[in-house]
Amino acid sequence: MLSFAVCEDEACFTTVLERLLHQYAESRKTGLAIQCFTDGEALLHSRQPFDAILMDIKLPGMNGTDIMRHLRDRGNRSQLIFITAYPEYALEAFELDTVHYLLKPVTAENLFPAVDRAVSRIPHKDERYLLLSKMGGVTKLKLKEILYCEAFDHQIIVHTLSGKVQFFGSLDALQKELDGRFFRCHRSYIANLDFVVDTEAGAAVFEGGGKALISRRKRQEFTHRLLTSCRKGLS
Figure 1: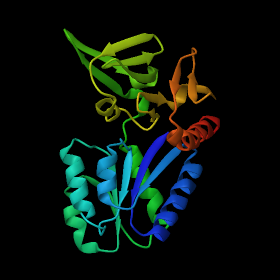
Figure 2: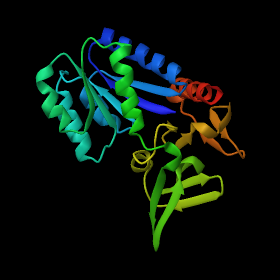
Figure 3: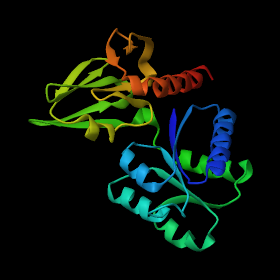
Figure 4: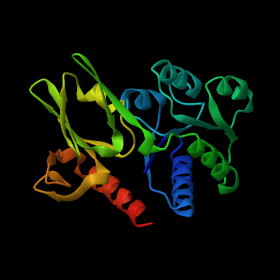
């Protein structure tokens, strides 16, 4: 499942972009999770990993190019599509490794090829790894084999198909290294939605029987993300 962020302060245009992106996902038979932000600071503070970002340039507070410059300085490698009514920012935008620069109004005819190009540049998620620094060396884990991650007693426990890996760290830092298939469902848990087989009593149940708590405020979003992931699996 792909994860996209839309950063746009005009509600009507955000609605248009969401509709077009869902049409894109349906036409390409792929799962797509979309999170919308009305200003760049909210996107910065989210610290969530996205496969791609659709960014307006004229925003309340910091403009889109400044926001992306901050994200790039943090090591963010999300594929970037600028969507704006101002052609004069194109040169500055492409200095930020921009996939495409679209002028409003946007249609399926010009958005879909731009998204195709962005998706083609996203590393295949099954080829991605998590590198964990531990005393005496580094452990390399395939993301596709991680069931869920748990914070417990100042340590992180990564539950995988083949067992557990423990290290000292924080879920906040770990979350930045994961991709769109993972969801922070609780302050102490990150779930891989690809392995969720059931939910019960405020918890996600994984293949093999492991469980991760789902906080009350995250339950609605968790259900939405899980349904999106399931639709992708059925396509």
